[in-house]
Structure formats: C-alpha cells, structure tokens
Image (cartoon, rainbow, N blue to C red; front, top):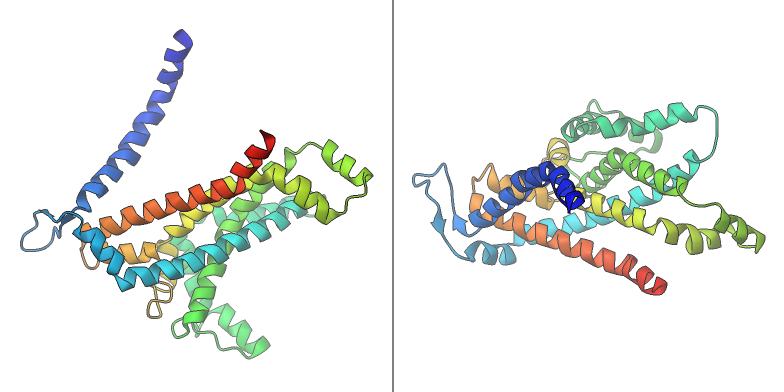
Length: 292
C-alpha cells in the first residue's frame, strides 16, 4: 500500500502537467469546434452551431486537397527518414576515422528550431541568391524555382524535413541496434544466412518496437508541420504545400475562423490516432500473436 501511494505521489507532478497542458487544451478546442466564433468580429461571442463545422470539413475541397498532399508528404518524408536513418545507424555502428566528428555534425539539425530550418532553406533555395538553384543550374542546367513549380516546392519540403529529422531516427535506431544480443547473429552466420536474410528475419523483427515508436513520433510531427513550410513556401505555390497544419494555421489566424479551425484540428487528431493504431496493429500485433 505504501509503495502504491509513493508511486502515485511521484507520478503526480507529471499527471498534473499532462492534464493542464494536454487534456484541458484538447477539451477547450473540442468545445470551440461546436461553435462559430470570431473574437475579432462585431459580435465576438461564441454561437453554438452543433456539428456544422464538422460537416463543413467533410465537404471542404481545400481541406481535402491539403489532406491529400499531407499524406503524400508524410509517406515520402517518413519513409526516406527510416531508410536513411537505418543506413546511417549501421554506418555509425562501425569504427572509422572521424566518427565522433561526423556524428556531431549529423546531429546538429536537431538543435535548430523549425522556424530557423525553414528560414535557412528559404535562403538556400531562393533563385537569385540560393546555393541550391545555383549548383543545379551550373551542374545540370536545371532552373529550380519553388515559387513557380508545385512539384519542386513539394520535393524541397520533403528534403528539408528529411534533413531536419533524420538524425532523430538515426539516434533511435542506434540505441535499438546497440541493445541487440550478438548470439542470434553469430548463429545465423554459422548456419550460412546472408545479410539480407539476417536483416529480414533477425534484425528487423528485433528492432520492430523501436521502429514503430520512431514512426509514431515522426508521423505525428509530420502531420502537424507548420512553421518550416510557412517560412519556406507559405503553403504555395497555389496549394501545392498547403499541408493540414498550414491549412489550420491559415484558417485560424489570417481568417480568424476559430470554430472551423478547431473542428479541423480535432479531425486531424482523430486521423492521427487511427493511423498510429493501424500501424501498431499491422506491425506489432502479428508479432505478439506469433510469440503467444
């Protein structure tokens, strides 16, 4: 009994913080989503509208378009980060000259604020002064202008996200690889298994929990990306990079449409939870059933 009381006492500060900064804001946003509210209008009072905001979301072509480009952005960004992060994790598991230096340089993007990342990439991709358009033009004769090409803007935002967050994936997978026991790998090599078989049948199943946790983190972050993209493209050209986070931002702040923006936020949160649940079921549930 004493140990249980002590455990709850130690958890109390964390639970209070989660309630104040997690549960209460969500309940407030959920409450606002059932109202029409523009605090800067002539009538700043909330007007109850029931599920009208959610009905608008379902038929809002702008939101549906932003959801489509967001799914594509999340897929390419997270998949690229996993592949590159695993390759770098395997490389950093080996000893080579300058390993500590390269690991330090590799981790530097993580300490940069997203708005700074967007500003840096804005400078690097500006046609008149940016190093990337200059190199592409001199080396390959390619004219890169993310303000005019929707495809180029989308690709650059994916590359920017990969550059910023791949170090997080690398560090997570390094921790998972370091914790693996050596016996299964030695036994597989004795039995004549090649590298591909060792990866699919030993390494990947053993690091699956770490991979899923990493995908959860990156999936949630990528779905709500705002500041980087706003600084780089502003959601353009057109709506090519108007991801759901940018869509919510523009609905809430420039248009001061707080009720509708809250409804979109609730739906995006629900879709994020569903996506994480489906990922968990598809990757970890079969693994647990095999063990059982």
